[in-house]
Image 1 (cartoon, rainbow, N blue to C red):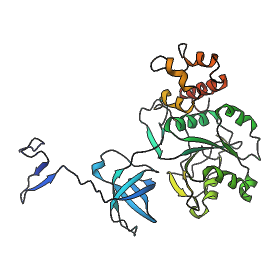
Image 2: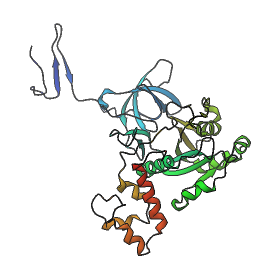
Image 3: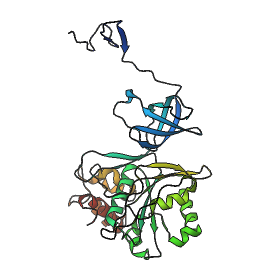
Image 4: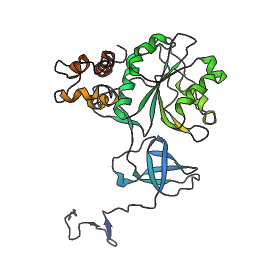
Length: 336
């Protein structure tokens, strides 16, 4: 049987032989210039829920996009049935360039990175002060991922009625990270929600945290009209919670002044993909000092130029220590 390749008389035509009519098929796909713009709200087994104007539309990725995947937060172009009616399906034909990406790998030995959220402005790292106990290494890893992906970090500390926040906040004081401390009573009264809302207004914020810290409960309180199941409980043996969120979901804050993205509870946060040269961008007081660093410097080796930069008084030594502590967490397990 004759095989048909791309080297025919007309390169853009592929002829499919058949017993009936021969139907030429083109390799040139339409650009869909008139496609509607949408925002990916969640992804579930190849189906993407998108917001197009004021309508929620179900869509799937067009074949011409190849292996390029759309994730929550992506700005996309859609064609097809955009009515949002039941059993209708649109098609995503373009994915806009991303302004930021939150990435992770399954572990530090995994070479395959996964984009969790796109186009978020900040990353809210939620951790309980007790029940379960804080895991600073996991917090450090989330901060590294935020700096690497172009997101501004925010610390949200919950359950302050069970333990004071000062000891944990001291670890991050030199990083100048904004933070909010909440208690159960303050959440119920709405006082804590007002403080959190101040940090979220006008921004797209991705929430991350390990299970049991109250992340989804906080999101539910911020967006009560979009309640999510909160059936997780802390395991008395492991000190870790059960997952209550199984896929990332973007939810609008009331008043059209921001978005929150709830993500599944974390068990681990691999940083195999992180490049130290990108993390240093989050330290503008230290970045000029890297000009004298050797190529591919890890910023924690004998020839690193940052030591001389700090010794000359250009930056606070505590800031260099904080940078190196964050970068070193790539080599350590979250529980260390």
